[in-house]
Length: 205
Image 1 (tube, rainbow, N blue to C red):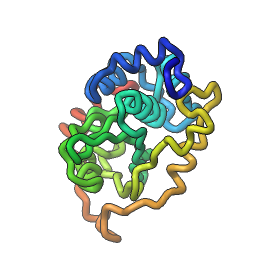
Image 2 (image 1 turned 90 degrees about the vertical axis):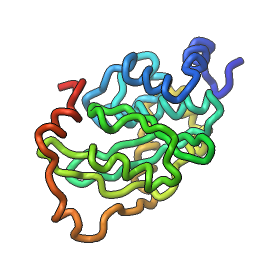
Image 3 (image 1 turned 90 degrees about the horizontal axis):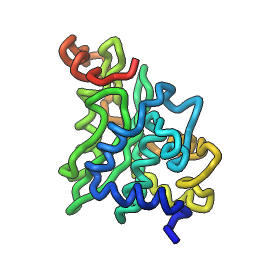
């Protein structure tokens, strides 16, 4: 029997995604973007596989489940924003360096190769691409430590037929590390038109 409560077909599909980049390609190409970030749904990986729809939280959960099938721990990191939606990454490590997977409606907020020596370094790679539609650079912090979703195994987070709101609720409660010194946001430049256009390539309106 497949582990983690997965059905045989779910296990086979996730096992076929043999690398983190293959998982990201599946998120990008086979899972449609759910335009309601953090609501009104918070589907489990099983529900996402069934509906083939996900916003960033749901996509991160599916990515964490797929990474787990490959032998990685199921880790999430919350990115905290100002005047914008938060964003969630599924983390993995190769040779001690961090990489990330993510579902996003913006082209710059998705995959990162595992070349980052620390979490802050990884998070800062998203800074210039993290903005709202007025061009305001909005990334402000990140959860200080990755959250291992194994803590929710007793609730069946990977295969639940109920929505898993307890996971984003937990992410909001954990300690976050600020990225900027107080007042620094007042001096940030706005993203120019070319940057906005590049970030919106493939965006679902």
